[in-house]
Image 1 (cartoon, rainbow, N blue to C red):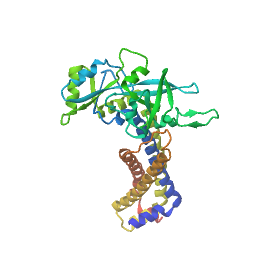
Image 2: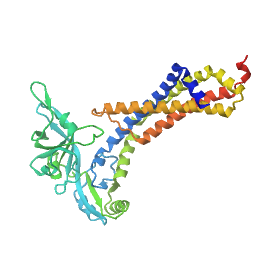
Image 3: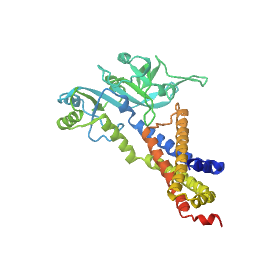
Image 4: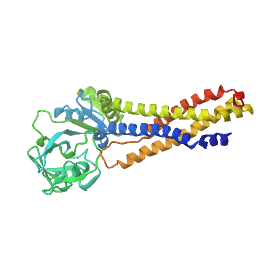
Length: 383
């Protein structure tokens, strides 16, 4: 019966490829749009993920996400260091700064001020230069995307070259000199990233009473991180989050306060709906064309359970093939856009969601056909 079911399925190539096209389309759209959505959400906490050394982030209690910086008083650093269970605590400056290019144009950049002594939070994947060179006068490290993109140097003849070692930048009327180029994850706003010392960053930006954005903390070995967070909040009155908690807080803000989930949700729903309509119509049409064969099998004594199994086998075969083709096409698309600014991140959880959606589509299509076959009277075939 398995061989008969498969021969029936591929016996009409036009309908077979029509069914396969519907499942593939649904799988590809769900996977592609879902991967772009996951990629965008991953970029919202890229800064937190890049800084691997601290396991606790301390900030003002009103902070809602990573870019919602509410500066702290400088005394907060010593108060955090005095909490039991804290191994070390260092300051971090995070803010925006305008870079003036030789052409006269201004580019907004993310500026990170790292602890002068430890350089904790510095990028690890340096393509050129050394992190220690940040201690040189006016030194800054630029991310690769910014160096080859918005901060690239443009010559008189219109050609551009990437920002390189030794090039100078005008940062709010201060001179900065590039001592390194790093490869870091793109942020949500995809602006160039500049890294320098904390003391230098506070000189680059306009003077304010409060300049410290966050306190990066590492708990002592063997001490529960959640307990240290609770102790910091209790003794300092500040908010303390573990890295996963701060990442989740950032993602939750964008999910709640932006239209991104609605936009991608509509795209995924349309992909599911179109795939279900095409697959359901084509599979039902395929079943109607083969009713005479199902009727003959019933007349020969084939049970309804066997016929049900044949239809489910056909639907399952199409589901597996369509899912594989759809996910493969989506992955190929993402790989081809790897060097662009498109956010694309395909995870196994997303593949599982696409597989469940495809299984549901094929199950609905099979359900329509099963009802027609089970209610079929064998005698109708011979009339």
